[in-house]
Image 1 (cartoon, rainbow, N blue to C red):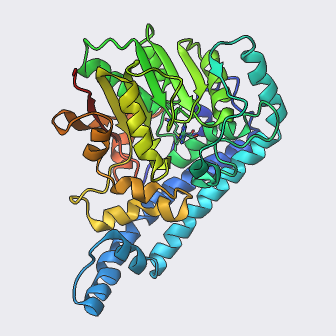
Image 2: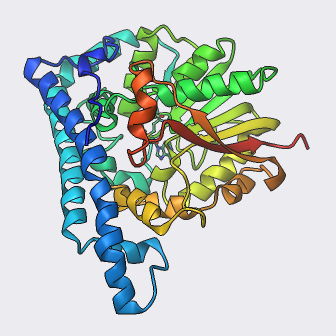
Image 3: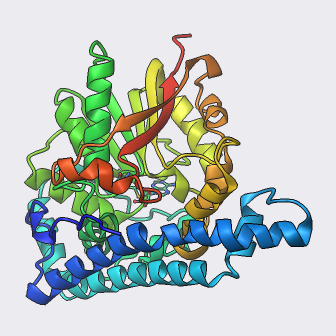
Amino acid sequence: MSYQIPPVFTKLQRHDMMAEFDHDERARYNFLANLNRFISTVIAPGNKIAYDNRVEPRFVQENGRTFQDRHEVQTAMSQDPMYQTWAALRRSTMEMRQQAGRSVVLRQADSLAEKAEKILKNSQNLVLKPHFQTPPYLAHVDNHLMPGSYHTEYRTGDVANAANYDTGLFVTTGGMLGRLTDGGGKAIAHWVKETYPDFQPRRILDVGCGLGHNVLPIAEMYPDAEIIAIDAGAPMLRYGAARAKLLGVENVTFMQVDAENMAEFADESFDWVQTTMFLHETGGKAIHRIFGEINRVLVPGGLNLHIEQPQYTPEMSYYEQFMRDWDAYYNAEPYWGHMHDLQPEDLMEEAGVPRANFMQVGVKAINDLDEKKQDSQVKEDYGRSPIWNVFGGWKPHS
Ligand SMILES: C[S@@+](CC[C@H](N)C(=O)[O-])C[C@H]1O[C@@H](n2cnc3c(N)ncnc32)[C@H](O)[C@@H]1O
């Protein structure tokens, strides 16, 4: 099978907060990006062949019926050598990505932290809380195998894990997120502007902003708006605020706030609330509290949008649900399955958007690194559609 190789790592747009990579480190990243692409395009389809030819027929023979949910598929497929091989390879590349990035950023932890401090001196765009409590569901998980996840600090003013996250996404996605790893944000900013040209948000809240990859394109699209980007992880916020400054984006304030309790924000004080690839990392109860808070802070008539991988709807085959569920089992994403079982219409009702106002759209991805290759390449690539799945809606005026 032929497949298109990812762009090289040096195509990413450098900014001064990015860690320095030497020749061998760049080569390692390129190798891993290629290995990921190979596994997801050449090896992954073997799972369907194993399912069709071996696993499902055997299950039917033994049980007199086919699968009734994705968990049964998981149990059966996990006995099959094809799936075992693919899953182990995928897990190993993720572990390697994390360790490759860590070896780069940890040796620069001091200089990166000092740089962030210097860039942010006297800045009003970063608000951290000295006694912030990391939400328990986040504190004990190394999300997607990132040791220490988003919140761990190895020194005062640390940004190391954010620096690892910034470049590591290139490896996992094979550069599909663009030069600044902001393809989702670019896509949603353009889509909102084109679809609702009269919408003039004055205040926008980005919940679970990470280091701000996807909120900066929104801030650039609406330069007169005040943007508040909240996250639980201090390293992400520090790095994000410094990165935004280096990229010349001034209208975003990065704040350390637990999305489950946004007490610092008044009722009905934001015109648009956005989340991007955030909800699947929130705990089982937390997600409902977060939607309650979003409802509280959103103005009547406000816009509420979420970019996420598609939910497991009844229309999605159990095989596809099972493949998408890999992250829940092997990528330290313990809330993934639970979150994707929830139906988006129900979540939006919790956020004050009635079913009549619910929308779910496929927003075309924007990849300024490699646009012409993108569409044909990634259709095969589970979980990495060239279309961003977006759900949300407008909160009624009264
Ligand atoms: C996968 S990252 C998404 C980053 C970002 N939205 C983007 O598009 O690049 C998820 C982020 O959610 C944050 N997070 C998870 N639970 C949170 C909570 N209860 N309050 C605030 N941030 C939270 C994590 O710290 C992490 O940075």
